[in-house]
Length: 133
Image 1 (tube, rainbow, N blue to C red):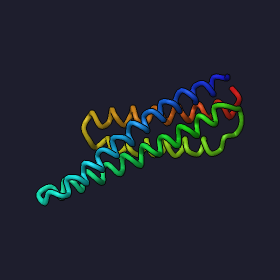
Image 2 (spheres, one colour):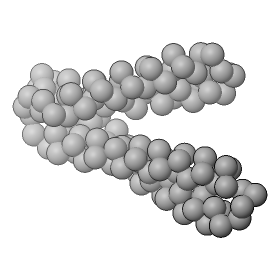
Image 3 (cartoon, rainbow, N blue to C red):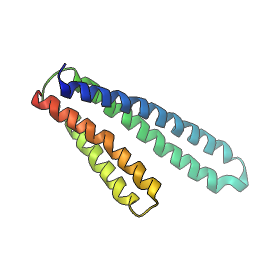
């Protein structure tokens, strides 16, 4: 297995694990927010919690899909256009999050930088696999 394939495989597995964790948090948040809606005083807070949970759930599922696309691409050398496009979208999305975080506190900027690291490594792995490195 070539270097690009190994890098892509490792990053893809990390993304799958992270996606499952994120989706689980999203599911718990969504169910917790829905349970709080029964209390009239907590309707606004629980609605926000449910919306955040749905966003986490969607993000987690997207991470899992990206991870499986990377795993599939890591098995053989080739163009892997779908994995490359997904990688570019991931980098652009993470860069946008970093730009938004620059207006926040230091912890959100650090989190956004770390969040940009995986998509960049994923894209490097896809590119190395495409070039047959």
